[in-house]
Length: 256
Image (tube, rainbow, N blue to C red; front, side, top):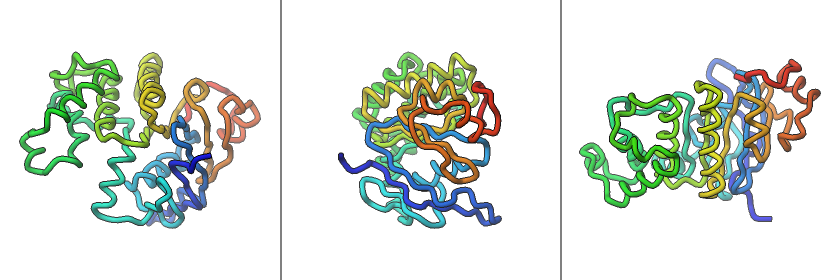
């Protein structure tokens, strides 16, 4: 078996107020997986993703990306890592008054000089790449529209296209459909699955509904109180496991 694209080793994150969000978490991620992290609010899901791409500094432990520990790198090295480990969020983080195309090109800022990016001097290659990814997520025709004229689901698809322009090896999705209605959730998740299968990009996502987890995940990790309590196939999360993870028995609970 090839070396995992990502290896988490005894990862600990303690915030300045003393809250221990992660308590020695360890797991591997194989290239091409669609790994889903589940758990109640406060279980450590978002902290875990933010430690992986260094939005948060881990307190201790290792984050091995392609065999290299990136848990303590600083400065320019962090920016280089974020090009390869892209991230999308629940609230899209778009610039409302900018066009869809302009927002997608923001994903190339790490590759373009500051002055050029300020004046929008992106290369034809960058623009072609942006258009290709807008087409991939089904909104190529919206390229010239302002981002704030799009629906929530369309804005999240813009965010996905923006992340893809970084040419990442891993895409982290922190509760990407939490603010969307059920039908739109499936649309966005379908595009993430296409990114995973067609482009071969490894995806690690936090999700809210067990029904979505069962449909899209190739593997699941459940966190509770900053520790892993389940790791395996989504099909193996039976009623007993569900109660252990969430403390309730309904399979359709929204897991914030």
